[in-house]
Length: 377
Image (cartoon, rainbow, N blue to C red; front, side):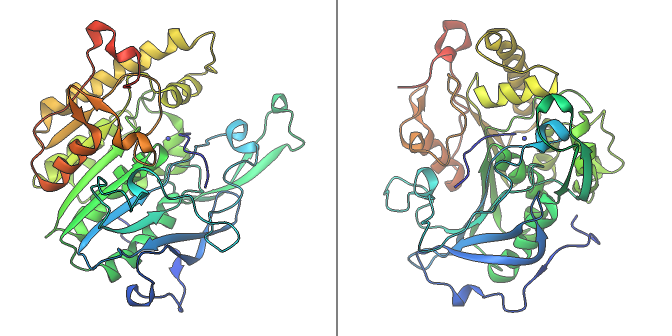
């Protein structure tokens, strides 16, 4: 499986189509992952796209939709090196999948989603699951040292994930509850697709948890325009009509979703000094973050993280937050899911409260005491 790095109205949009021999839910073995290809869907470097489904071992109406994380690119410098997006995730006998830790440890009795049906939306588009711009040619600067002058890429993450979700809607028509989540780029993917998921499951309770994806970016950051992200925002919600880059932020997005769907639950998880999110922020502001400047750049990012959290807590009563200290990136695909604790509240218990509708706290490390500088033990 690719490493868990950040980078970051389907309506009339032309989507890839599901293959005619697409299996239905009843065709899939329970308690096992099945890979389902999407005809016409393409990854960043024009490789094929597919998604994964694991029906629960025992019958259940609960559903988890998990968006994979894994990097982002937005120019010839970041897209030129054909790295983690060059190939796609496959499940076969020669390469067993690695979905076994965190929320994917279905043998762990403490796992709050161990009895959920699970759909895994892989990530291979470099656009945090939000792109709708195929065949973009970008100049590769000479300083990269790469033997190419340009690279052509497909920013089609929103279209790919939306096609997978069409299968989900057709096969999980009336789940009792839907849990939408993902880490890093997948945390943004969960947010960008949550509006359409919630509209489709309007009669079901939906819980959104965005893991390690707070969205600290410069205002009107050009990557979103390159990906054509603004065209896929949920314009059936009035606040998104005629949205401009200057007005948009992922905090704005989360708040307006929370207002539009007041009966649903919205949540974020971030560590106070998330080293990958800090690194992404550095690149977006023209700086490469390393050991020599992390201590200068990280506080900039952390201040905006706190601003995002406080803004959401003040304006969305159905929003909750969990913020431990330290620099670790992501939690939901890792075993620290079961060990991290803030203010006497374990993350796994906090997630359980989100799912059962009893959440009433937003645990945060104490900034004033230095607690936020170290990871929970």
